[in-house]
View 1 (cartoon, rainbow, N blue to C red):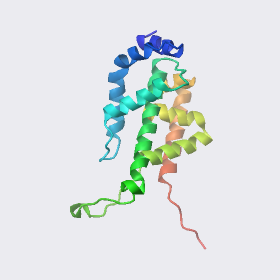
View 2: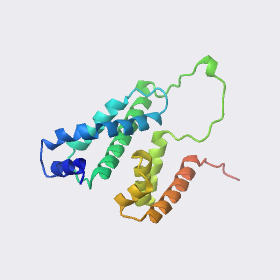
View 3: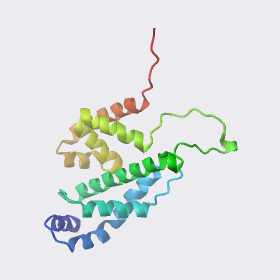
View 4: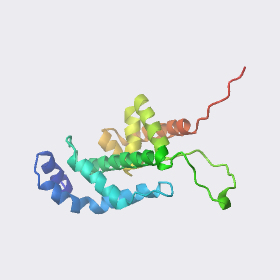
Length: 190
């Protein structure tokens, strides 16, 4: 049992001082996880990786239901918390009163281009939520792989499935999400 797992167990058992010991042990890994998440964000993101780590940590340690099954599960929960923070931040910025209905462009950049399908975090999150309605385990696997950066073996271990089963879920989920995010409404034929 690692130090992190021991401390997580102590926190679950109500040891108030254990939370103070946890942050120094997990901070660097959480910081790397946050930096990886921030690198996927669109330019102009005002949230910093350090702020993302602190907000996620507060949500994790301060939450009522803490039932971590070890170190890997804790980091998966941290990744999920970071995902929700980034989504909330993106939605807040897209509101009309924050200028979300306005698009800034420079005259130098006013050259129209055709881009691939949008994979912004809100579209991805909404697609994962729709996948969860159809196949909850596949959706959870995507969250663990994409947002927590876990390997298929690690994610499969958390979900309690074999590596082969995790691989099947991953293949299915990727194809399903690609179709969901890229589908374009087709014109009606009369």
